[in-house]
Length: 118
Image (cartoon, rainbow, N blue to C red):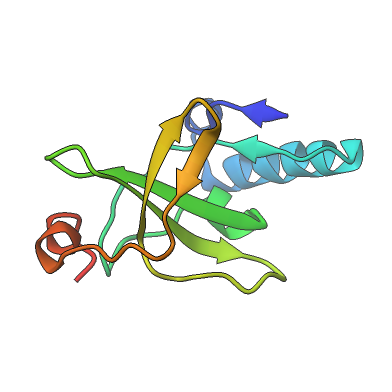
């Protein structure tokens, strides 16, 4: 199940408590289906001091997707409850077989700094 996007849902509620309840109810309903679920959300800030959003705290996993000015696509797993995972940003492509991540590729310092990872 894909929910695209939680950002749209967030704009329906003025108070943060209402937003939190709405997300909790949605996540509970999705969990009860037993299906694998993905929800997209727009990141409102980034970098080492970024503010995490309610949906990020309440979800089981957070995967951020970035694109550099020169077109390199980068994936970073911020959180994945109960699963050991790589914390480093990694390049990826979207091809005919879906998303392919290149875990052995290292990104240059200039690429990382362009995305405020440093």
